[in-house]
Image (tube, rainbow, N blue to C red; front, side):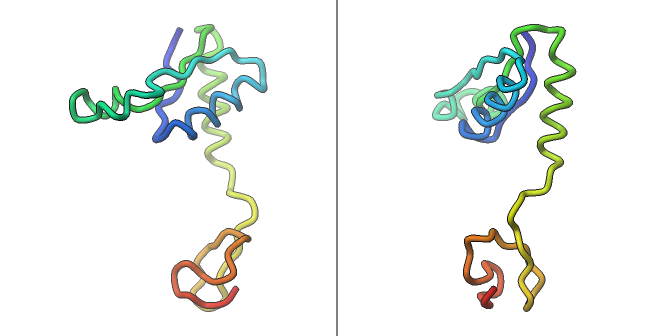
Length: 100
């Protein structure tokens, strides 16, 4: 079993775990509740981690995670006033307050 991904949050870890599981890579999410101990143990050790069960799948898993992270977020649109990107469900720009 090898570490494939260190997540910033539990939902992030679960998203990656689900992505890998969907393509047939067996994974485990560790440290699901350890974030509350950050400060008592190193933050890198306290955050959620996605581990690949089969060592031979590690490089494939890391490549899929990198590909997933490189994808643009769908549905964003640019503000005509300041040019900032906003999610499609926003009515006004989060940066300048202009109508989208």
